[in-house]
Image 1 (tube, rainbow, N blue to C red):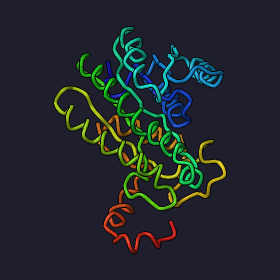
Image 2 (cartoon, one colour; image 1 turned 30 degrees about the horizontal axis):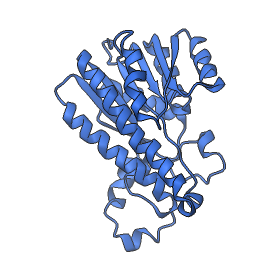
Image 3 (cartoon, helix red, strand yellow; image 1 turned 180 degrees about the vertical axis):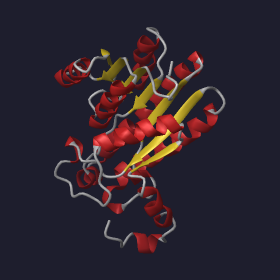
Image 4 (cartoon, rainbow, N blue to C red; image 1 turned 45 degrees about the horizontal axis):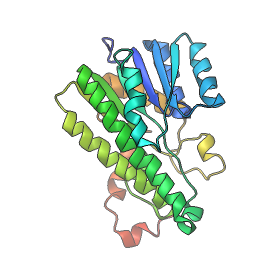
Amino acid sequence: MKDAFGLPQSLLVLGGTSEIALATARRLIMRRTRTVWLAGRPSPALEEAAEGLRARGAEVRTVAFDALDPESHETALGKVFAEGDIDMVLLAFGILGDQAQDEREPAGAVRVAQTNYTGAVSAGLVGARALQAQGHGSLVVLSSVAAERVRRANFIYGSSKAGLDAFAQGLGDALHGTGVHVMVVRPGFVRSKMTTGLAETPFATSPEAVATAVELGLRRRSETVWVPGALRLVMAPLRHVPRRVFRRLPM
């Protein structure tokens, strides 16, 4: 069960090698979290991530999970929930893709969409149903500021995150009053291995800053969290800029 501050004692991470997810897990372990499940494709990186969290005092277990295999999600997550209640599910997997290449080779664009949206819909519904069955818990979904207004420069990734963001909002509405809390997190450009070599956009942030915002959002029981918070004010007017103007902006 969550503690008096709304922080989880047990955590399931979908996307167990995500830098943002691991920063979040480290921060929550510093607080109250004692049990962590890392779900991801079996790999040395997944085991290394688990060892890193164990060194911080948590009981950490791994479970095989593939976002691109929705038929396996019920079984994979079922193994975790069969071991006991989970206070928080962090949906943190996703890929950026290569916009230029994926425009030329649509199979790459399909993989981005299937990972970021289709796989997340499947895992999100399975996780939400398990949380609802136990009567409590939070589902935290890592979206992106790219979901708020899709840009020409990354419209394949942005559109997949826009779909995920809308899905998570609707799921939160569907679960309202059930004891399950859904929180959508919209970071700006995050400095990480996934974005190495890319030009930073304004309001760039870090995995640690996202983790801090997630903790605060859990304490407040927020439905939407922007990282940094100023992005909420920046995106409010941009949402209404006419397309003929928006497409010419240097973004």
